[in-house]
Each structure stands twice: as C-alpha cells, then as structure tokens.
Length: 183
Image (cartoon, rainbow, N blue to C red):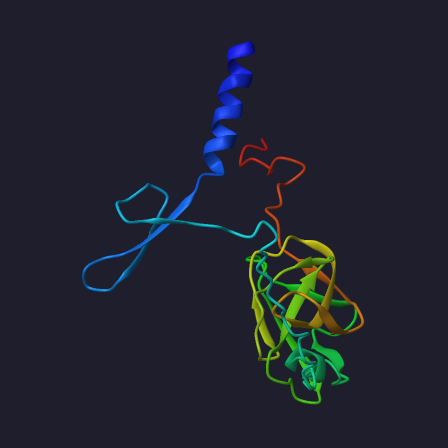
C-alpha cells in the first residue's frame, strides 16, 4: 500500500512538469516537455483559463404549417349503402355479394372506403364505392361502410344494413322412395 502512495505522488509531480522553449537555427520557435540544449523554462500561470462565451440563440419566426391530413379531415361525409337494401335476402350458394356505397361529397385525396361485415374489415381500402365480396357464410349479417385514412383513423361511417345470405342445401328425403315392388 505504501508503494502505491509513492507511485501516485511521482505521477502527480511529473504531471506538473516544466515546459521548455527554444529557437532553432532557422528561427522557428519550439516548445517541448523535454529539456533541449539552449532551451529556457517557460513559467505558466496557474490561473490561466480558457473560456468561450456562446451567444444566446435568436428565436426563429417560423409559422407552423397545418399537417395535410388535418385539413383533409375537415370534410364531412354522408355515406349510405344503396345495395343490398335493409333486410334483403341474397341467394348465392358461393356466398357472393355485390355492395354499392354512395359517398357525398366525393372522397378527398388520402381518404378511402372500407367495408365491414359484422364489425370486421372485409375489404382493402379503395376509392370506389362498389365492392365485390365472396365466401360469405349463410345467415344474418350486418354490413357497414367507413371513410378511413391510410393509418386506419375513421372519418365517417354509414348506418349498418342487415342482410341475409341464403344458400341452398342438399335436402335428403325423410322417407325412402317407394319401391317398384308393391305386390
């Protein structure tokens, strides 16, 4: 432990070593921390401090622009499902359904239509109001149209329209057909 303190003291003393200055034969001034022939010791002021003053930043006169989506969201849409009609029965063994949606006013740039069946998105985003759906299960369903942004934010919704998908089934007779043998 005692050797450690001695080594630390020697390191501290060497950190405050002398600075030497000399001029070579070409007249250039040199500085070094090692002695040199004809060099003189330079005395440094202990209180020498370098300080830099940075001026306060000037406030910028920038008027914030409204994001494009904010101005587009101001459009007020009226949506109506025109086909199928309320409580319509659709007969399709394949479960196909054509849906027509009327939108007023016309969709703004960046606004899209999306169709929902029983609360679940049934289509991709699109600009047109005609949707062709496939493989809808038989039974009662509710369909709704929405105007949405690309990020999924809903701007407007239609009222829900109920429809019934009817698919014919294979009917099995309850009783066997009468046989040709009746005698």
